[in-house]
Length: 85
Image (cartoon, rainbow, N blue to C red):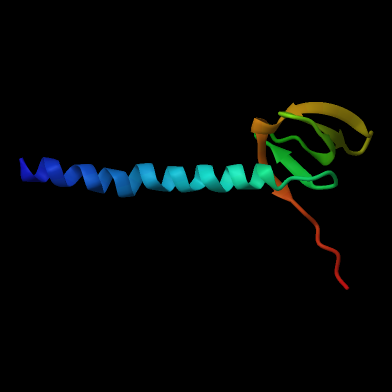
């Protein structure tokens, strides 16, 4: 019975807690996006944010300048280029 009871905290620290931490980081990333940021979607589309609505963003895709409407939840990563002085 004791090994079974020890398994519960091990599972929490090995699986559940890291997932919650990644979820919080992803939500913080989405909260910090702004027009001009470069993004990559979960589907692999890369572009630059033109505008942000409630749960949708408008993204400009290079090289043809195609504009796409993408759900915020589809954003996988954000790259903000900082200007060097």
